[in-house]
Amino acid sequence: MPFNIPILLTWLRVALIPLVVGVYYLPTTVLPVADQNLAATLVFIVAAVTDWFDGFLARRWNQTSAFGAFLDPVADKLMVAGALLVLVQLDRANAVLSFIIIGREIAISALREWMAQIGASKSVAVSSLGKIKTTAQMTAIPLLLFHDVLWGAIDTQFWGSRLLEVAAVLTVWSMFYYLRLAWPLIKEKAGTLN
Image 1: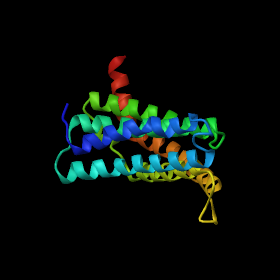
Image 2: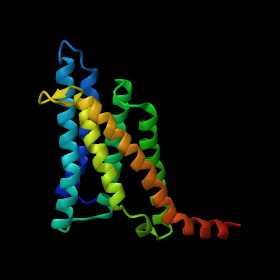
Image 3: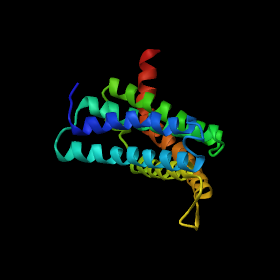
């Protein structure tokens, strides 16, 4: 397993996930709810920034690796799933939308792994649609974690909920996009099994 700064940042992101969830299990006498929200929001934002930064550094310093390419999306999916689960438990996120987002991540990860096994991983490389979906998710989640009025004007619960709806629509759209790209190979491989 290679060890460099980009991979260290990815491991840091994995380590931050329990903190986003864990602050909500502290007694309110230790950390009041507003402080729990702020702490979870800040930790999630730091984790999201490391997601961008580790990829940037890996490309800039030519430190990309197969292990990093594997670990980075796993960390992303764990981060989103952990945050969405806690938001559903706190009744700040719709369970159906969260299920759609998490379910799609699992399905597309499985599809990408299968495509990699047959040597066609470039067929389901990340698209601009997937990047827009990720941006909507990574903006919605901290807004929902914060769960308050920001700067006296922005209702973060309202806007976070709307962005999560946008993310869910983009999630389904991008899933069909990837499936359409992979479909010829799926049909071909299914035909060879008969």
